[in-house]
Length: 218
Length: 215
Image (cartoon, rainbow over all chains, first blue to last red; front, side, top):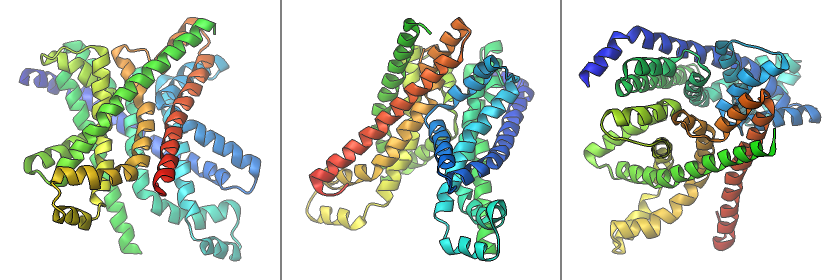
């Protein structure tokens, strides 16, 4: 067993490259998904009924399908419509589209529980539309969402492992590669599991840190 | 897509549903047992379960299935794809279920337990008659939510070679060179499966309400 871990240790560069790729994909996906989620949230809360129905259909539809299926649709399905990505970009797109819908729903929940007076005061000061959203609505709901967003980020990290199936060189993919080359499945996958665990603990710690900071400023 | 292709997608759906159901039937009671051990505060075991839950909740199901399927034979435990998938699904969901049950147990009023002890109930009897009938109703929404999450991560078991809905759709797409139609049918199938779980929860809740006047 120690020999197996020694083999994995000898190839730690590969594993760490995969780890770095996972981290990079997830951070990028979270940031972009958050940006994409904002307009979807606005559509979910819009006065305009057709727009609301459309956004609701998109979000509910996305919440019903497995992430891998969406990754396949983007990677294999879209090229038949003439849209072609390489596997890394396809993976990132899948993460963004899928999670933007979940995040939009999270933001909507926080928005719905935002006190009405808050928004009325914004209206009274002449804020409307996008400016109202950005200056008055978004800051408090983002703060309220920090713990749930932490959970969502952990979900993104775990979803990103599916991308090994479309050959994105992330952590699970590299662990698979090491295991198939040297036949060290236990050591390779346990190392990957531990790295995922470390990553998720870091996210949890950051969430705790931000919450304490926010508590102090209040 | 030909009629045969629809049939193989349906076959994939039976595989997804049956393996997930077996995983759930093993994982829900396993999660409850783990939560009870932590609730009782059994010294070493509580700590071990806390680590088990923390690690499993952070592990992607794909990685975990690969670990079970490739690493167990490596350490001398031969395992076939179907048992490997079931073990992976059950252990994964048990970690999440443990937290759901634990939250319900933590909220359970201590006074009721004291009353049960005062009435001469053994801990086992008190659990069966007093605690369990209340906590399962509190936990039901969380458990069903976790079931739908499990269904959505179930395509991970395809790494063992099992043909579930997603894998069946990919195969048809590769054969017909038209991947979009099978993916759309697969989407509809997942939608129906998840709707089934949510409907079942509603049915149980309305049944409970009719029987006891509250859910």
